[in-house]
Image (tube, rainbow, N blue to C red; front, side, top):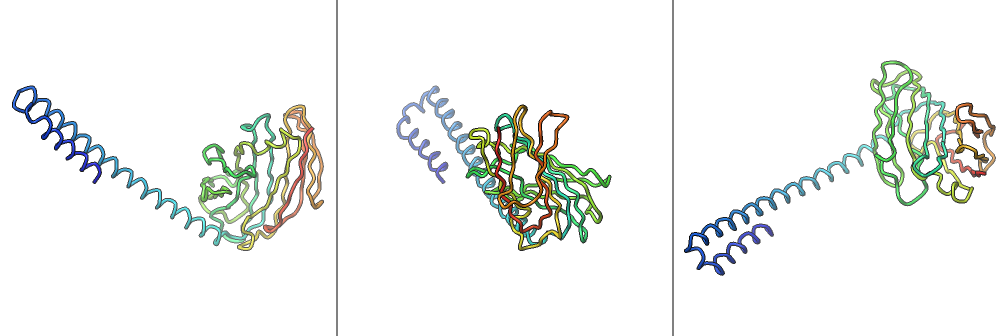
Length: 267
């Protein structure tokens, strides 16, 4: 409506203020050019408004679909037991903070997907999914493909690792991703905390048991110390021959409802 009104306003202005020019050949040509330009502008505005409305409609439909998918996947996640290993590489700067996740998942029944929350900085601003560069693959059995799909991009990014075809026996798979700024406080002050939980909705379906290993890899020429706040799990160190640094390893058996807080110090 705004575009149409503008178009006719231009026409009326031309007709009322420049009618004397129309009688001449030059005036007629100018009038034709103005009409053509106004008509083109009208068509452009109408098409742009229609595209904008369509974009908003598609976005609304996508958000509704993602919300429904989030609800369904939380409610229907199958039971499994698992060996899970998370390796945190503390980078020299924010863009170098990496996480490597390797899991051996044994489903009780056929398992189509495994939902998990990537470890991200405890800040108000959630990293954009594309900035995390998530990549995943199945190590075995051969012939099983892994698709990484973001479900809910809010305060906590939720991800589905979708198995094609579904898995019915132990499956070993991995996911690598960036977590920009994960260890910023550690680099600035030398101290940081990491809060970790297997599932953020453990009341739904808990894993039977999970053998979890967390490895903390410092930058070159730096040392880390790690302690779980309640003293749970076993802490040991090992030397990385590839990077020449000492890695801190924490290991424990956990369930989906267990919440852990780690105090991390770097020297």
